[in-house]
Length: 266
Image 1 (cartoon, rainbow, N blue to C red):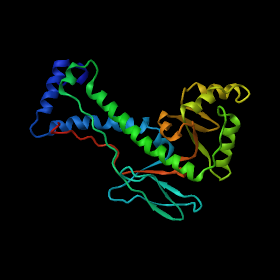
Image 2: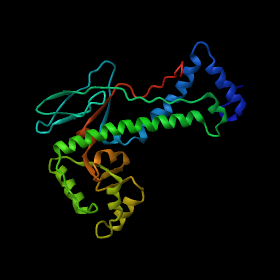
Image 3: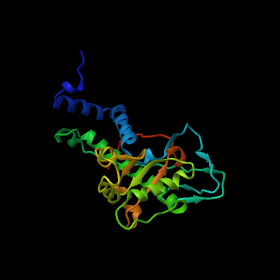
Image 4: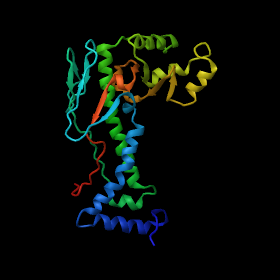
């Protein structure tokens, strides 16, 4: 009868991994890769902030990501491939979005598997997921900042953010028959929300706002805080008030995550 992996000791686990890596057919590497794929995909889906702000569009094979623009007076902002600047398309009815790969390479020495007290493979997966999440968020945040600079109304607040300034931002969205669903903030902006008192919010809403830590909600909109917005602020802390994901943008994906072992590492 077989045993589950929880009942195996370190020597037995090492022997299994050794046999997999020595498989001359290469199937051993594939088995390790398959074992890593699903957890990594879950981490991307549930940790990244960017995917919560715009709608994810998983493309069928061979489909070109082409979208019809519904508002003629609002330019479209497109993330260009190969590190090129964001593209602003105006006076168009249809736009094609280029796709490109976001990849990371993580190496792990064989001896790390047996000498580390933690699971070295799991730790490597966590690092890879963290790097991919940052790369995705940087691209999405950059597109949001470009769109905000191009299209949106900006309000400068001399000191900490106030309830009045937030209400004005909600109103700018709602007067266009849209709903403010998400707010993306620099950590320094959220610091101002932590200073709200009972003259800004009643005690029930204040408790609901602060008990979740950095991730909170106010007036039906989710608040997301990320230090990755540092690269967009130019020395000034900012907050982006966003419509619902379906009305804000699309994130086309040809395939979500694929892990490939490097058969001939340097």
